[in-house]
Amino acid sequence: MISQLFILAPRGDTIVKKEFRFDVPKNTPETFFRAARFGTGRDDDEKAQAVFHEGGVNYMHVKASGLFVVATTRRNESPSLILELLHRVARVIKDYCGVLSEDALRKNAILVYELLDEMLDYGYAQSTNTESLKTRVHNEPVAVVLGTAPTHPQSSPIGANRKANTSSMQQHALSHTDTMVGQVLSSAMSALGTGSSNTKIRNLGTAHARVSADATQRSVLGTGASGSSSLNGATDRDEIFVDVVEKLNVTFSGAGHVIHQDIDGQIRVRNFLHGEPSIKIALCEDLVISGRPGGGGGGDYASCVLDDCNFHESADLTGFDADRVLSLTNVPRGEFSLMNYRSSCDFEPPFIVQTTFETNTPYQINCEIVVRAQFSAKMHCAGLAVKFPVPKSKNVIAATATVEKTAPPGSQHAVFHPVEKHVVWQLKKVTGGTTHVLRVSIATKDERVDSSSKKECGPVSLGFSVPQLNCSKLQVRYLQIGKTGPERKEKKKAANDGPHRWVRYVTKSNNFVARV
View 1 (cartoon, rainbow, N blue to C red):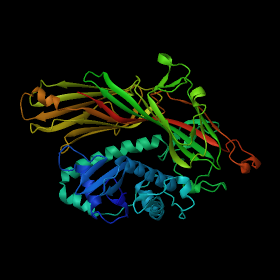
View 2: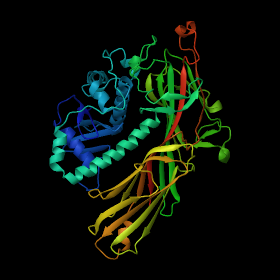
View 3: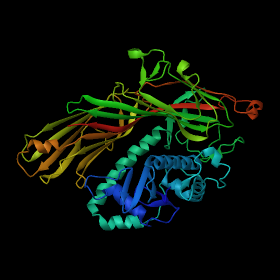
View 4: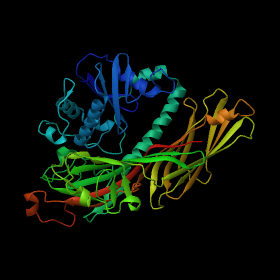
């Protein structure tokens, strides 16, 4: 099936590498990372796709928590099958290590290789079920202290080759791009409870209104009935986290009007419950799904309309069409996707982007980018990144980006990358209802700029994550947990003795662009 599986850090360092058939070159990590960073060489603007062919080897990869999970093969295998396998491998490693990060993989290297040996045999998938692997895994996870810098070697063959083949200016541009991606990624992870601070989320049936943001950073091996300490030292409580994660695809016209919009959503469950309790998750009653009966409102009066959806194999849909209640049986431990859905109904985008140009100044193109947050003032976006490509013609000399003067020091940062020819504008925190402005001045060799140079600008793309925001209006009415076993009956429950239930919402950008 596959010849090789390896995991690379965002810089290109090889963290994990497993050989199965020994029929591919040893420098495949270098070849893949070069293609992922700088393209395959067939087109200057082309970056590595999820599946591509290079040097007689087929490369297939997914990105999980900023890491590259890559499989190689010389055979003509099904790409969708291998991509799904890579997603499941990343999920299983996260379930057992508690967190999927470079530091966690390095500290739990023995556990990771043991998992790969059990999941894959001679390149063929055996089992990717978290619960069934517990009987075959004998290594314990090593605790990872969140917020610390990852431990990694000072140099690597990939890093050395990149330094030798890339100018210092390219490295400078890439470092700023990595910083932007890292900040947006960390904000998205924080929104889902993977940061280092406390996160306020919706609590169902417990006395706490806050939960530590690293509450989900627990290994399934630490979830036992004895109530022992978890991976991060916290009390091993009965807990279940239900995350409603939505990714937005929005396209704006040059005038700021919405041309296209849709939502790719997911109800993600992180299960740390003891025993095998019955679970019921009730969604909003006026939910309407195309092609399925049920729903209270229906038609134009429904508050939530979905085009399509699919469910996890553990979901019992017997009463779903009647009362919109999902009954879960044989719920797997760790993280799994309970429901995936798609909606193309109209919704209010969290941000509105407008761009204006002024070409009256000789040897200069002036552009003003206005970003307005349309969500509630009670919410905030941590880690907004705006990318604005400038013309790549030789007439463009340089570009200067200026943030608004009223911005607090350190809250915004804008920089022009001369190699990749784009301006990156980063905002650490954006409160709902606020408006932010960036002014970009592009210096040209010609005194008068023609219309073609203006057309080469843009489009403006946004990367963000907004906790507590739900654009599709898909809500969880209640989360009901049955009995978790006889040992819980004998124990007198305190005010905060589990099971603890948490429902959280977060909206992120997937393809959020504005034409100019």
